[in-house]
Image 1 (cartoon, rainbow over the protein chains, first blue to last red):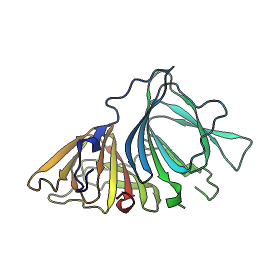
Image 2: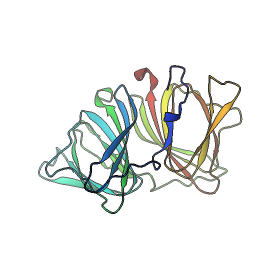
Image 3: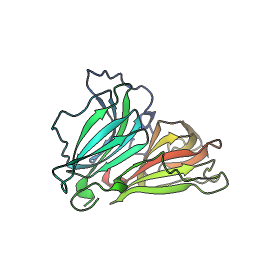
Image 4: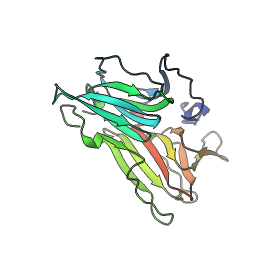
Length: 128
Length: 128
């Protein structure tokens, strides 16, 4: 976007096109679609990757994640029940809103096809 | 979300489930998934609806729209070229970032199936 608010080509696309090839023994690919003043939109492509055992994301930002293609499971560690975790299985169309500092990890992603995520991040300070 | 940041069931769902039945002679359905401090996430279901002729959205907010299912066309009126418009055809996976005050309208939506959109709105004042 330029200052006159004109749409440019980078502002239009398809998240199912030009999907990077991610191998099961390689790294996930994160691509920024939008990043201004702490509001971020990313496409993430996975192929069997998951968080290390006992690794937990603990983010400053609020996250809203949507699964476009493939499958995955998110594990949530809830402050209310610290001795247990909750598993959320995601299929195409699934979304999860993850409040800031809610501990979570990617327990698994599909190993038979690429998984495509849309992830949104907002500053939690604007939300509280 | 409550104050302890615990995930509640309303924060988890699937946008391909419980899709409201929209008829071609009825109204589109807008459902709020998230709405805090001007950051909004909506699911929109259309079935052949489009903007009236010569109607143009002119929004205070920045919008980022993603097409999950179906098809649609957005028409953009660009300040740089006021005597012509630009048509953007959307299929599943397509996204368009629409800056605040960029005039646009829904020129058409699929008449053979329901079209499901994911729309994000941010206050533009936080982005400039």
